[in-house]
Image (tube, rainbow, N blue to C red; front, side, top):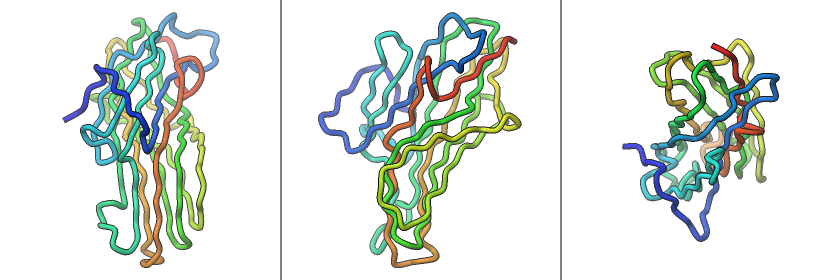
Length: 210
């Protein structure tokens, strides 16, 4: 079941913070309004009760705060912990006659990888009812011990456009994954702290007339 973004939940000291905001790309023509209508989520990185949320008063941005979005490998760590994911379903409200696509994704997180441990941060997105999928991913190779901030850019040939004449939710399946098969005794941890954008700035939304 998807959790629903209906009530503001405040967390005093969240372990992880994920922010998702949307933005129209700098173009000559864009819709005269774009609003976040609703958001839902599900996945091993965002189980029920582990996510706090906030929608800005102008409905132009939202923030999700996670306390369980952590992938780990190492001695004594169950194998199921090597991958965590969270699928977001984002419903936008905008005027008829427009179609949009995402072409950049900004991600922030933390990685602590011993030598021989490989990490992967990945986002796949698609529109409800469409088979077309876009993928943005960034690999990390140990040794690494730092916060990371990444901007992925999707090539024009891989852009996935929303259908014209229909309102379809955008699904964004994010994940972090670790692999220590080349160094079985090595340990690693990787988180997603934030996925950023803004209806006025980032998360690379590009518009076109239908």
